[in-house]
Length: 86
Image (cartoon, rainbow, N blue to C red; front, side, top):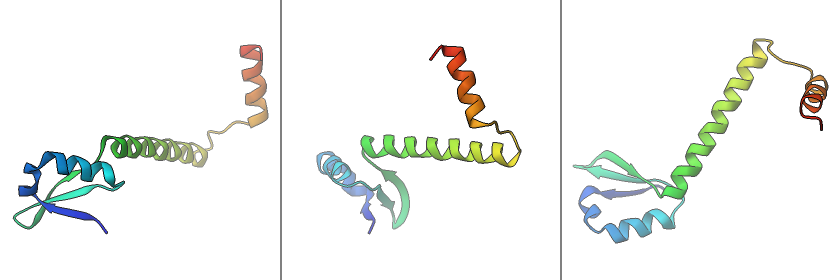
């Protein structure tokens, strides 16, 4: 269940920091009963960015496969081994 707190609770920054770091989910901040902001720990934010980067790369790869821009894996490995003398 998401954590939702009113904006007035942001005055207690130490408690908010503890709350952010204690959970692996974003904290939703409301203003006058409506959603206004989202807070999360730096650790959770960095993992979210890394996950999004992986998804973006997978999307790009799927587009390349759909467009027929692929190569034989064994031929590519032979080329790389020859290029880097491995």
